[in-house]
Image 1 (cartoon, one colour):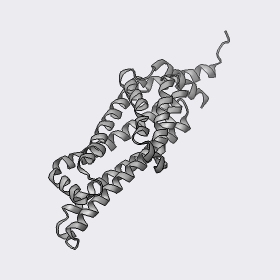
Image 2: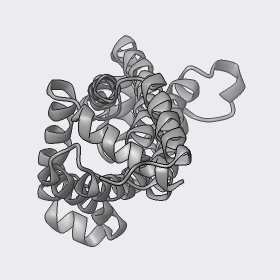
Image 3: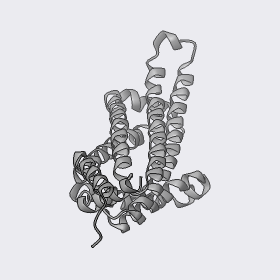
Length: 255
């Protein structure tokens, strides 16, 4: 066995101290999973389920009647979207920290796409709130007729849907990058990496609307196995602490 030099022993000591001071990777992964779940539930309720109930495609009058007749539910959906945005920020940053040992540059790039996606998610919630501003605007919008206000409200909801689709595209880029990082990691199953990358590709299909229209809703069904398997693994298992620390130690030594 080759004896370590004093410099090597000092370097190993610093690495050990640095690792000991960090939060447990398994705990960090589980917290990321909890916020991932909270974001998924609130986003589905606020940005998909409730609008799907109330918005009548191509019928501004019926959509307006539904929104005003279920105003409390509509406002709850807006609150849920804001909670989703906040939760999304937390788990995207935690994912960046978890995957830095695999590849710092790609993890940072994934975080960038994730944060852009979150910004678009927030913008879509603004468009979702706009119909209430229009329909409850009072005297400030008295120059518009009722039909015009209803048409404007529906237009904002259509803009919300388009912005949400763009959000999914950027989220798709995040999924592809994280899927690759999972595959390259030693602390998560590689099959989950493949499935998450496949989920990302299904979201990226939104870049070509004719293909999406042809495949819908089966294209988005491809996203379910990857996202669900990743979420459940994080909640139930987390990550392999020992392997994560080994990979993180190797990354620190390289620096």
